[in-house]
Length: 292
Ligand code: G4P
Image 1 (cartoon, rainbow, N blue to C red):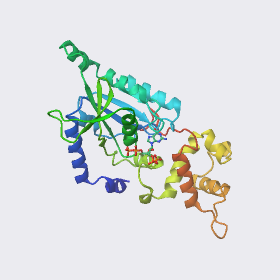
Image 2 (image 1 turned 180 degrees about the vertical axis):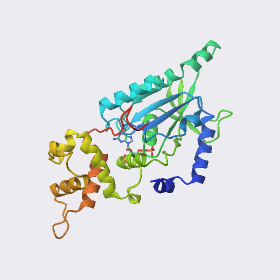
Image 3 (image 1 turned 90 degrees about the vertical axis):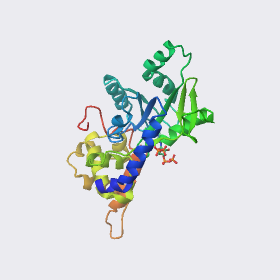
Image 4 (image 1 turned 135 degrees about the vertical axis):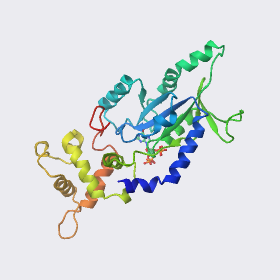
């Protein structure tokens, strides 16, 4: 796994990205961290809190249309208990985005009140978006900026060329997101990112990945998955995951010459359907689970 991730994040690239983010952080008051609601642990950047230091943060649990609703609520509650504001969003449809300005105001309330007490009528707050590749940063920015007029900023102290979107009467957002790296050295993190398609398939053993996904689905037993492949729920636990891949391939008529089952095609199909949420709205990582 670490080899795979090094392909995307060689050290020079990381240093450059980090520097860019640090420079942009100087321009903003708060950060919106986008996570994939299906894998809130693995889609985190391990160094973000260190990078942003004491800046207030809002977590956006994106792609909530594909995650289990109860699990998403549990995650929001989990963050709340830690004093972190999180909201569920779906940047494809725009659902949940109306809550964004209010959430930022909430985490910024201390600063806003301080500035107001000094006589500022309506202090303008600035925010930047951060997240690992494919979590939906561009989708978020496109959605929000479509609804809000873009304007070029040329106030002193602001890097030339930076563009800000007006989100509400006291909130502006930087147009360029901070692209962060995922956790490098954890095999499970790599697998979960691959389940959701956040990392490229060409560098992974697709059949092995499908078997690992089936290990998980066998335990969870989502109704849509069972119904879709007409599986016997009671036999799932005792079926080897590679055999299960063959059963699924056979049910879809994926055969190669000689009557053998085309397990590679079955693996691609299974992952595609999982990624499109056709096997159900499935959250892979739960709060208080084994992954922390
Ligand atoms: P990034 O900037 O963080 O790299 O991510 P980006 O917005 O490009 O989103 C990555 C993929 O995730 C895109 O799909 C995008 O449509 C999808 N996506 C983003 N937010 C959501 C969401 O809330 N729900 C769902 N279901 N999908 C979301 P793609 O296949 O790369 O492109 P396309 O299908 O949009 O053409």
